[in-house]
Length: 377
Image (cartoon, rainbow, N blue to C red; front, side, top):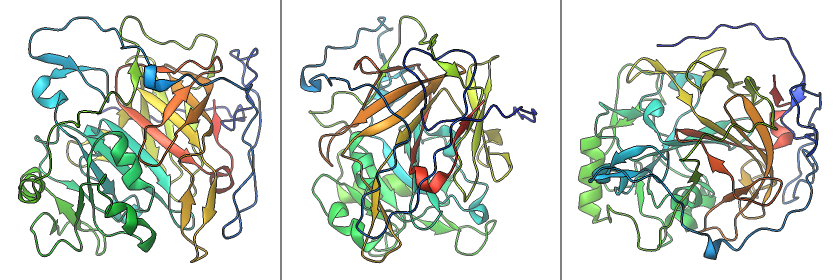
Protein backbone atom coordinates (compact mmCIF):
# COMPACT_ATOMS: atom_id res chain seq x y z
CA UNK A 1 0.00 0.00 0.00
CA UNK A 2 1.34 3.39 -0.95
CA UNK A 3 1.05 6.11 1.65
CA UNK A 4 1.86 9.75 1.04
CA UNK A 5 2.81 12.34 3.66
CA UNK A 6 4.49 15.07 1.64
CA UNK A 7 4.66 18.72 2.72
CA UNK A 8 3.59 21.19 0.07
CA UNK A 9 4.23 24.88 -0.43
CA UNK A 10 0.95 26.60 -1.20
CA UNK A 11 1.16 28.07 -4.65
CA UNK A 12 -2.44 29.24 -4.36
CA UNK A 13 -3.59 28.23 -7.83
CA UNK A 14 -7.35 27.82 -7.80
CA UNK A 15 -8.83 25.17 -9.99
CA UNK A 16 -11.41 27.79 -10.77
CA UNK A 17 -9.60 28.17 -14.06
CA UNK A 18 -7.92 31.47 -14.34
CA UNK A 19 -5.76 29.58 -16.79
CA UNK A 20 -4.75 31.70 -19.74
CA UNK A 21 -5.02 29.74 -22.95
CA UNK A 22 -1.65 30.96 -24.03
CA UNK A 23 0.08 31.10 -20.69
CA UNK A 24 -0.20 27.70 -19.06
CA UNK A 25 3.39 27.36 -17.87
CA UNK A 26 5.07 25.61 -15.01
CA UNK A 27 4.55 28.51 -12.65
CA UNK A 28 1.19 28.52 -10.87
CA UNK A 29 -0.93 31.64 -10.37
CA UNK A 30 -3.31 32.37 -7.52
CA UNK A 31 -7.02 32.73 -7.97
CA UNK A 32 -9.90 32.19 -5.59
CA UNK A 33 -13.37 31.12 -6.58
CA UNK A 34 -15.94 32.38 -4.14
CA UNK A 35 -19.60 32.99 -4.58
CA UNK A 36 -22.66 33.36 -2.43
CA UNK A 37 -25.12 30.50 -2.07
CA UNK A 38 -27.94 30.58 -4.55
CA UNK A 39 -31.45 31.21 -3.27
CA UNK A 40 -34.17 28.66 -3.94
CA UNK A 41 -34.95 28.20 -7.63
CA UNK A 42 -32.27 30.72 -8.57
CA UNK A 43 -29.52 29.58 -10.91
CA UNK A 44 -25.99 30.47 -9.84
CA UNK A 45 -24.00 32.73 -12.10
CA UNK A 46 -20.56 32.62 -10.52
CA UNK A 47 -17.90 32.02 -13.15
CA UNK A 48 -14.88 29.95 -12.11
CA UNK A 49 -12.95 31.32 -15.05
CA UNK A 50 -13.20 32.59 -18.58
CA UNK A 51 -12.47 30.41 -21.58
CA UNK A 52 -12.45 31.33 -25.24
CA UNK A 53 -15.62 30.35 -27.05
CA UNK A 54 -15.35 27.05 -28.88
CA UNK A 55 -17.40 25.44 -31.61
CA UNK A 56 -18.49 22.03 -30.44
CA UNK A 57 -18.34 19.24 -32.99
CA UNK A 58 -21.38 17.23 -33.97
CA UNK A 59 -20.75 14.12 -31.86
CA UNK A 60 -23.34 12.16 -33.80
CA UNK A 61 -20.64 11.95 -36.49
CA UNK A 62 -17.57 11.42 -34.28
CA UNK A 63 -14.96 9.23 -36.00
CA UNK A 64 -14.18 5.80 -34.66
CA UNK A 65 -11.30 5.73 -32.22
CA UNK A 66 -8.29 3.90 -33.62
CA UNK A 67 -6.68 1.45 -31.21
CA UNK A 68 -3.93 -1.13 -31.39
CA UNK A 69 -5.17 -4.60 -32.27
CA UNK A 70 -5.43 -6.85 -29.24
CA UNK A 71 -5.29 -10.65 -28.95
CA UNK A 72 -8.46 -12.58 -29.63
CA UNK A 73 -10.90 -12.38 -26.76
CA UNK A 74 -9.53 -9.03 -25.54
CA UNK A 75 -10.77 -5.47 -26.03
CA UNK A 76 -10.18 -1.96 -24.72
CA UNK A 77 -12.49 -1.00 -21.89
CA UNK A 78 -15.02 1.72 -22.72
CA UNK A 79 -14.43 3.17 -19.26
CA UNK A 80 -10.69 2.85 -18.58
CA UNK A 81 -9.15 2.37 -22.02
CA UNK A 82 -7.19 -0.58 -20.60
CA UNK A 83 -7.16 -4.08 -22.14
CA UNK A 84 -9.79 -6.35 -20.62
CA UNK A 85 -11.39 -9.61 -21.62
CA UNK A 86 -14.47 -9.30 -23.79
CA UNK A 87 -16.39 -11.04 -21.02
CA UNK A 88 -15.65 -8.07 -18.77
CA UNK A 89 -15.56 -5.34 -21.40
CA UNK A 90 -19.00 -6.12 -22.83
CA UNK A 91 -20.65 -6.56 -19.44
CA UNK A 92 -23.13 -3.92 -18.40
CA UNK A 93 -21.71 -2.11 -15.34
CA UNK A 94 -23.23 -1.22 -12.02
CA UNK A 95 -23.61 2.38 -10.86
CA UNK A 96 -23.61 2.24 -7.07
CA UNK A 97 -24.36 5.02 -4.60
CA UNK A 98 -21.70 4.93 -1.87
CA UNK A 99 -21.91 6.55 1.56
CA UNK A 100 -19.21 9.22 1.87
CA UNK A 101 -19.62 10.29 5.49
CA UNK A 102 -16.87 9.85 8.05
CA UNK A 103 -18.94 7.26 9.91
CA UNK A 104 -19.10 5.15 6.73
CA UNK A 105 -15.32 4.85 6.47
CA UNK A 106 -13.67 2.67 5.47
CA UNK A 107 -15.66 1.94 2.32
CA UNK A 108 -15.50 -1.33 0.42
CA UNK A 109 -14.97 -1.67 -3.33
CA UNK A 110 -14.28 1.97 -4.16
CA UNK A 111 -10.71 1.33 -5.35
CA UNK A 112 -12.02 -1.26 -7.84
CA UNK A 113 -14.37 1.21 -9.55
CA UNK A 114 -13.59 2.18 -13.14
CA UNK A 115 -14.98 5.69 -12.66
CA UNK A 116 -16.15 7.56 -9.55
CA UNK A 117 -18.31 10.69 -9.44
CA UNK A 118 -18.19 12.88 -6.34
CA UNK A 119 -21.33 15.01 -6.26
CA UNK A 120 -22.85 17.58 -3.88
CA UNK A 121 -26.22 16.78 -2.33
CA UNK A 122 -27.64 18.69 0.68
CA UNK A 123 -25.87 21.33 2.77
CA UNK A 124 -22.11 20.67 2.49
CA UNK A 125 -22.47 16.92 1.96
CA UNK A 126 -21.02 15.10 -1.03
CA UNK A 127 -21.77 11.55 -2.15
CA UNK A 128 -20.01 9.02 -4.36
CA UNK A 129 -21.44 7.22 -7.37
CA UNK A 130 -19.08 4.48 -8.48
CA UNK A 131 -19.21 2.88 -11.92
CA UNK A 132 -17.86 -0.65 -11.75
CA UNK A 133 -17.85 -3.28 -14.48
CA UNK A 134 -15.98 -6.18 -12.87
CA UNK A 135 -17.12 -6.57 -9.28
CA UNK A 136 -16.96 -10.37 -9.28
CA UNK A 137 -13.89 -10.48 -7.04
CA UNK A 138 -15.26 -8.26 -4.28
CA UNK A 139 -16.24 -9.77 -0.96
CA UNK A 140 -18.71 -6.92 -0.40
CA UNK A 141 -19.29 -3.31 -1.44
CA UNK A 142 -20.69 -0.31 0.40
CA UNK A 143 -21.72 1.32 2.57
CA UNK A 144 -24.73 2.03 0.33
CA UNK A 145 -26.60 5.33 0.31
CA UNK A 146 -29.51 7.13 -1.35
CA UNK A 147 -29.77 8.81 -4.77
CA UNK A 148 -30.60 12.31 -5.99
CA UNK A 149 -32.28 13.29 -9.26
CA UNK A 150 -29.09 13.67 -11.32
CA UNK A 151 -27.58 10.31 -10.34
CA UNK A 152 -29.72 8.15 -12.69
CA UNK A 153 -28.63 10.38 -15.58
CA UNK A 154 -24.97 9.75 -14.73
CA UNK A 155 -25.61 6.01 -14.63
CA UNK A 156 -27.23 6.13 -18.07
CA UNK A 157 -24.07 7.60 -19.60
CA UNK A 158 -22.41 4.27 -18.83
CA UNK A 159 -25.51 2.18 -19.64
CA UNK A 160 -25.29 1.04 -16.02
CA UNK A 161 -27.77 -0.75 -13.79
CA UNK A 162 -28.44 1.74 -11.00
CA UNK A 163 -28.15 0.43 -7.42
CA UNK A 164 -28.89 2.65 -4.43
CA UNK A 165 -30.38 2.55 -0.94
CA UNK A 166 -33.22 5.05 -0.91
CA UNK A 167 -33.74 8.29 -2.82
CA UNK A 168 -35.04 11.83 -2.57
CA UNK A 169 -38.59 12.56 -3.73
CA UNK A 170 -37.13 14.65 -6.57
CA UNK A 171 -35.31 11.58 -7.93
CA UNK A 172 -38.38 9.36 -8.17
CA UNK A 173 -39.56 10.36 -11.69
CA UNK A 174 -36.10 9.58 -13.07
CA UNK A 175 -35.84 6.28 -11.20
CA UNK A 176 -39.20 5.24 -12.67
CA UNK A 177 -38.20 6.24 -16.20
CA UNK A 178 -37.71 3.46 -18.75
CA UNK A 179 -34.10 4.62 -19.23
CA UNK A 180 -33.23 3.64 -15.65
CA UNK A 181 -32.94 -0.04 -14.65
CA UNK A 182 -33.42 0.65 -10.95
CA UNK A 183 -32.60 -1.43 -7.89
CA UNK A 184 -33.53 0.30 -4.63
CA UNK A 185 -32.34 -1.29 -1.42
CA UNK A 186 -35.17 0.27 0.60
CA UNK A 187 -38.32 -0.27 -1.50
CA UNK A 188 -37.50 -3.53 -3.22
CA UNK A 189 -40.24 -5.73 -1.70
CA UNK A 190 -37.97 -7.73 0.55
CA UNK A 191 -35.40 -8.95 -1.94
CA UNK A 192 -32.09 -9.93 -0.30
CA UNK A 193 -29.70 -7.67 -2.22
CA UNK A 194 -28.54 -5.75 0.87
CA UNK A 195 -27.59 -6.76 4.37
CA UNK A 196 -26.36 -5.09 7.53
CA UNK A 197 -22.74 -5.44 8.69
CA UNK A 198 -21.56 -5.18 12.29
CA UNK A 199 -18.22 -3.41 11.75
CA UNK A 200 -19.65 0.02 10.83
CA UNK A 201 -21.61 2.56 12.85
CA UNK A 202 -25.38 2.53 12.97
CA UNK A 203 -26.91 4.22 9.93
CA UNK A 204 -23.93 3.28 7.77
CA UNK A 205 -24.13 -0.52 7.79
CA UNK A 206 -25.94 -1.34 4.55
CA UNK A 207 -23.78 -3.36 2.15
CA UNK A 208 -24.17 -5.83 -0.71
CA UNK A 209 -22.23 -8.64 -2.33
CA UNK A 210 -21.75 -9.71 -5.96
CA UNK A 211 -23.97 -12.77 -5.47
CA UNK A 212 -26.78 -10.77 -3.88
CA UNK A 213 -26.86 -8.07 -6.55
CA UNK A 214 -26.50 -10.56 -9.41
CA UNK A 215 -29.43 -12.57 -8.09
CA UNK A 216 -31.57 -9.44 -8.01
CA UNK A 217 -30.51 -8.42 -11.54
CA UNK A 218 -31.55 -11.86 -12.76
CA UNK A 219 -34.85 -11.72 -10.87
CA UNK A 220 -35.70 -8.38 -12.48
CA UNK A 221 -34.67 -9.56 -15.92
CA UNK A 222 -32.37 -6.65 -16.56
CA UNK A 223 -30.24 -6.69 -19.69
CA UNK A 224 -26.61 -7.52 -18.83
CA UNK A 225 -24.90 -6.44 -22.07
CA UNK A 226 -24.65 -2.96 -23.59
CA UNK A 227 -27.57 -1.37 -25.41
CA UNK A 228 -27.25 -1.33 -29.20
CA UNK A 229 -26.99 2.48 -29.30
CA UNK A 230 -24.09 2.58 -26.82
CA UNK A 231 -21.03 4.03 -28.55
CA UNK A 232 -18.48 5.23 -26.02
CA UNK A 233 -18.20 7.19 -22.80
CA UNK A 234 -14.61 8.47 -22.98
CA UNK A 235 -11.98 8.67 -25.69
CA UNK A 236 -8.52 7.44 -24.77
CA UNK A 237 -4.99 8.19 -25.93
CA UNK A 238 -3.92 4.69 -26.96
CA UNK A 239 -0.92 5.34 -29.21
CA UNK A 240 1.02 7.61 -26.87
CA UNK A 241 0.26 9.23 -23.50
CA UNK A 242 -1.48 12.56 -23.28
CA UNK A 243 1.18 14.59 -21.46
CA UNK A 244 -0.63 17.96 -21.44
CA UNK A 245 2.75 19.54 -22.08
CA UNK A 246 1.31 23.07 -22.18
CA UNK A 247 -0.69 22.51 -19.01
CA UNK A 248 -0.28 23.99 -15.56
CA UNK A 249 1.45 22.03 -12.79
CA UNK A 250 -0.97 19.89 -10.81
CA UNK A 251 1.02 17.74 -8.41
CA UNK A 252 -1.44 18.21 -5.57
CA UNK A 253 -5.09 18.92 -6.27
CA UNK A 254 -7.30 20.01 -3.38
CA UNK A 255 -11.00 20.00 -4.21
CA UNK A 256 -12.31 22.00 -1.25
CA UNK A 257 -15.44 20.00 -0.39
CA UNK A 258 -16.15 21.04 3.17
CA UNK A 259 -17.47 17.68 4.36
CA UNK A 260 -14.48 15.43 3.67
CA UNK A 261 -11.83 17.95 2.49
CA UNK A 262 -10.36 15.61 -0.15
CA UNK A 263 -7.17 16.03 -2.11
CA UNK A 264 -5.09 14.04 -4.60
CA UNK A 265 -1.30 13.76 -4.72
CA UNK A 266 0.50 12.84 -7.92
CA UNK A 267 3.19 10.15 -7.84
CA UNK A 268 5.43 10.41 -10.93
CA UNK A 269 6.82 6.92 -10.28
CA UNK A 270 3.56 5.31 -11.40
CA UNK A 271 1.70 8.27 -12.89
CA UNK A 272 -1.26 7.97 -10.50
CA UNK A 273 -3.08 10.42 -8.25
CA UNK A 274 -3.48 9.09 -4.69
CA UNK A 275 -6.57 10.24 -2.82
CA UNK A 276 -6.88 11.58 0.72
CA UNK A 277 -10.04 12.39 2.65
CA UNK A 278 -10.83 13.42 6.22
CA UNK A 279 -7.14 14.26 6.69
CA UNK A 280 -5.76 10.80 5.89
CA UNK A 281 -5.19 8.38 3.01
CA UNK A 282 -8.45 7.17 1.49
CA UNK A 283 -8.17 3.41 2.09
CA UNK A 284 -10.44 0.73 0.66
CA UNK A 285 -11.23 -1.82 3.38
CA UNK A 286 -11.75 -4.47 0.71
CA UNK A 287 -8.05 -4.67 -0.18
CA UNK A 288 -6.29 -2.28 2.21
CA UNK A 289 -5.12 -0.14 -0.72
CA UNK A 290 -5.18 3.62 -1.06
CA UNK A 291 -7.56 4.84 -3.76
CA UNK A 292 -5.58 5.96 -6.84
CA UNK A 293 -6.64 7.10 -10.31
CA UNK A 294 -5.00 8.11 -13.58
CA UNK A 295 -7.35 10.93 -14.56
CA UNK A 296 -9.11 13.71 -12.68
CA UNK A 297 -11.94 15.74 -14.18
CA UNK A 298 -13.24 18.85 -12.44
CA UNK A 299 -16.70 19.55 -13.82
CA UNK A 300 -18.08 22.91 -12.69
CA UNK A 301 -21.87 22.93 -12.40
CA UNK A 302 -24.59 25.53 -12.00
CA UNK A 303 -27.39 24.59 -9.63
CA UNK A 304 -30.56 25.71 -7.93
CA UNK A 305 -32.27 24.67 -4.72
CA UNK A 306 -35.35 22.49 -4.76
CA UNK A 307 -38.60 23.47 -3.06
CA UNK A 308 -37.36 22.15 0.28
CA UNK A 309 -34.76 24.96 0.27
CA UNK A 310 -32.04 22.40 0.97
CA UNK A 311 -31.64 19.79 -1.78
CA UNK A 312 -29.31 20.89 -4.55
CA UNK A 313 -30.26 20.19 -8.15
CA UNK A 314 -27.10 20.13 -10.23
CA UNK A 315 -27.69 21.36 -13.75
CA UNK A 316 -26.03 18.58 -15.70
CA UNK A 317 -27.32 19.49 -19.15
CA UNK A 318 -26.34 23.12 -19.59
CA UNK A 319 -22.56 22.76 -19.91
CA UNK A 320 -19.85 24.93 -18.38
CA UNK A 321 -16.14 24.92 -17.60
CA UNK A 322 -13.78 22.49 -15.94
CA UNK A 323 -10.31 20.99 -15.77
CA UNK A 324 -8.73 17.84 -17.10
CA UNK A 325 -5.82 16.69 -14.91
CA UNK A 326 -3.37 13.88 -15.62
CA UNK A 327 0.37 13.17 -15.39
CA UNK A 328 0.93 16.11 -13.05
CA UNK A 329 -0.58 18.69 -15.43
CA UNK A 330 -3.95 20.41 -15.88
CA UNK A 331 -5.68 22.07 -18.83
CA UNK A 332 -8.94 24.05 -19.01
CA UNK A 333 -11.87 22.29 -20.60
CA UNK A 334 -15.54 22.83 -21.35
CA UNK A 335 -18.28 20.23 -21.07
CA UNK A 336 -21.56 19.73 -22.89
CA UNK A 337 -24.58 17.46 -22.41
CA UNK A 338 -27.55 17.86 -24.72
CA UNK A 339 -30.20 16.08 -22.66
CA UNK A 340 -30.69 14.35 -19.32
CA UNK A 341 -30.58 10.89 -20.89
CA UNK A 342 -27.46 11.69 -22.89
CA UNK A 343 -23.68 11.65 -22.67
CA UNK A 344 -21.43 14.37 -21.27
CA UNK A 345 -18.59 15.29 -23.63
CA UNK A 346 -15.46 17.18 -22.59
CA UNK A 347 -13.55 19.53 -24.91
CA UNK A 348 -10.20 21.30 -24.83
CA UNK A 349 -9.68 24.98 -25.68
CA UNK A 350 -9.60 24.14 -29.39
CA UNK A 351 -12.98 22.42 -29.29
CA UNK A 352 -11.46 18.95 -29.64
CA UNK A 353 -12.86 16.18 -27.47
CA UNK A 354 -10.23 15.38 -24.85
CA UNK A 355 -8.47 12.03 -24.81
CA UNK A 356 -7.98 10.55 -21.37
CA UNK A 357 -4.96 8.48 -20.50
CA UNK A 358 -5.85 4.81 -20.01
CA UNK A 359 -6.70 4.15 -16.39
CA UNK A 360 -9.30 4.95 -13.77
CA UNK A 361 -11.00 8.35 -13.61
CA UNK A 362 -12.40 10.43 -10.75
CA UNK A 363 -14.93 13.16 -11.64
CA UNK A 364 -15.63 15.94 -9.14
CA UNK A 365 -18.85 17.80 -9.95
CA UNK A 366 -18.10 21.11 -8.31
CA UNK A 367 -20.35 23.99 -7.27
CA UNK A 368 -17.83 26.81 -6.73
CA UNK A 369 -19.91 28.44 -3.99
CA UNK A 370 -19.91 25.16 -2.08
CA UNK A 371 -16.28 24.13 -2.43
CA UNK A 372 -14.71 27.50 -1.68
CA UNK A 373 -11.18 27.50 -3.04
CA UNK A 374 -9.95 24.67 -5.25
CA UNK A 375 -6.17 24.62 -5.52
CA UNK A 376 -3.42 22.99 -7.53
CA UNK A 377 0.22 22.96 -6.56
